[in-house]
Length: 320
Image (tube, rainbow, N blue to C red; front, side, top):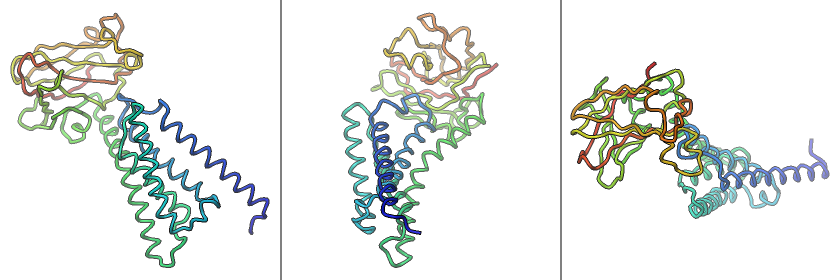
């Protein structure tokens, strides 16, 4: 049953409003100071980035319902829409770079993938006579969509792994443990391990002010535990430091050194095994206790005073 002229007009008006609201809402999220920050979890970051796909797919699907857009023809839209998404996303990323945000080619590809999904959902077969081209269109859109799903799948896998291992934070027995750390040169090694078969090798480079590595993905809630334990293999006698930041510190408007936790450890050449009691080291210089229910940053490092070129870390865990 066909809609009458007044009904069709109301429907077009509805799509105009929906398109406008979706577009404006997306622009707000693109430029507003919202979303992930440097201590956000990998899963949150991945889901936020995946939002580019969802938003672009919704905007394109709504736009394709508008007569002003459909008059271009399906074949032309299948060509022009991904190009327009690429240009739009590129301009947005350039603007974000100018205002202190981090541009990403991944976001550009996600917008193109979203555009292809919007096209597939609304007009998969319009403008073509042969089924082969319909299948080709759909395969292209699905392939791009699945590629954008990979970071989310990886983050879910790592999140499930760390939850299953807890209260062990990292024992470096699988590649997933390496993926949860960042540093200039870090890798899994079998040459030295205090527990299991592998440990994390950290190269200490001269160009770094504080050479070391950051543990970026770990369970944040340490309540119910009273000790942090780990093993460090030192190339030579040296000091090793651990910096821990909680949510309160990271949400402060200014970086106050006296309000973060820095643990200084003496390491002899070879393996050193530490068990650190929360009561002894969770107090900051300002007199505030580290919030063990919201630990967000874990950075292990040293200085150049000792001339060490590397160290190895293993079996980081919480104990009762």
